[in-house]
Image (cartoon, rainbow, N blue to C red; front, side):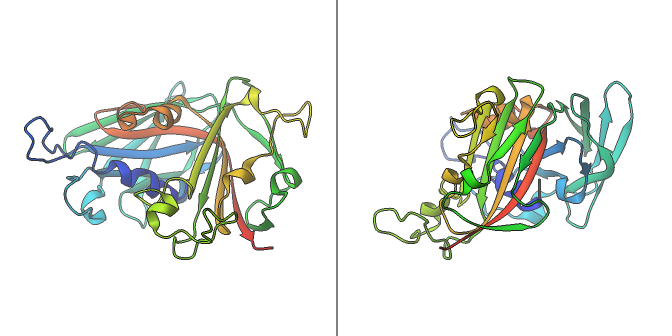
Length: 292
């Protein structure tokens, strides 16, 4: 998952547990270590798939990234079973740790250890079943397409060994709210009036960023009988312009993070810190939705 995508997820949690208020019933700020990242099945752990490690900051203060990120942490990932240990290093961007010699394998388990200031955070993930994807969407480059008929003309066929595996479809628009234009105008509007209308209070929620999930066995369609297919992803695209589309099989930690309505950052596979340490298998596509 690229840094821009990591940041849009984790900025929401950097102030978690940091509420300072005049109400005695409210918890005082307590600095926590935040871990956010995923192992990608069958892909090397490059800088673009790094794990971000940071501190929480008080929610009533201006967020400062240079103060939040944790530099010089001791970060390791150990493959359970074989015991092979990988030391993660910081890249050019402080607070992001990776080791491109680590290639996580489906159905294997990995243990993360983060040591910072005599504090230790641990987490474990079991990489999900591999996801075999067939589609006419381009790989490795931007695919310029029209919205009308997109899903049916370029459906995404998937195959997985576990019929119960959770599949996530993540669609994110990269346009700024000032430049974004609705494909189907709402209430006569051709453009969102502000960032809140574009993507929620933080600018990164619906309709700019939409996540859908389903069990693998439920990915059927009358358009393609007898096949497991995603032929409706275009309905998740609301604007013209640049998009990232991800089709992922996800582990239990990421599933808990996405589906816990209260405090998901406390229930996502970590001990001694907050955030999420998970794993996925799948692919990323880059689309540009052209105007007709």
